[in-house]
Length: 215
Image 1 (cartoon, rainbow, N blue to C red):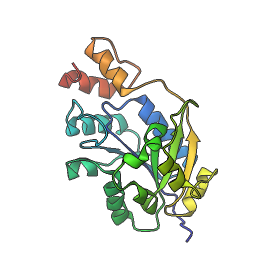
Image 2: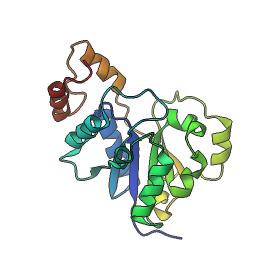
Image 3: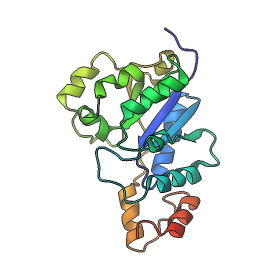
Image 4: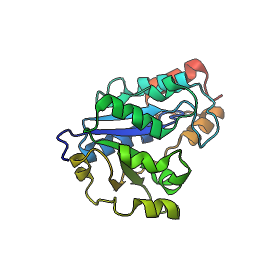
């Protein structure tokens, strides 16, 4: 069934802290897909990594500060409000209840996550609820496990704009501008007393200093 709406792109993550790499990727993906909105969804407790050193509310506030002048980017706090481990399949179920069955939802994943998607909770249901957009960055991405490769056969499209024609079920790849910025590196810079200027929005830097985060 054809869907007239442009759709919504979904970025999940810890955003610990949010930086220009996150924000630039969100803008580029949104433009390439032609969506109406890009949702940034901070996790409460990420299932695949250690507990963040900042609280969920601190990470949420940094995201709000980073996007407060960008109507195109929307911070969605449903995973933090849900508490506990943040499973993307549950988030997509919740989003589907909000937007109905016809709106295209496009889940954006880095290749590292895509390569081990079979470790995600109830991962085979993801394309029942949304499309998947895999971000390839430098051409040296890790190999994809066989279970994910076989499951994805027949779902691929070479044309990202085609995702807007259906509510879910398709997978595509996109290559973005590579900004060599990582949250891990930023935390180390701050921990060692160096300046994180020009790696993230000024409002986020001021909040980190005010709250004495990552020291």
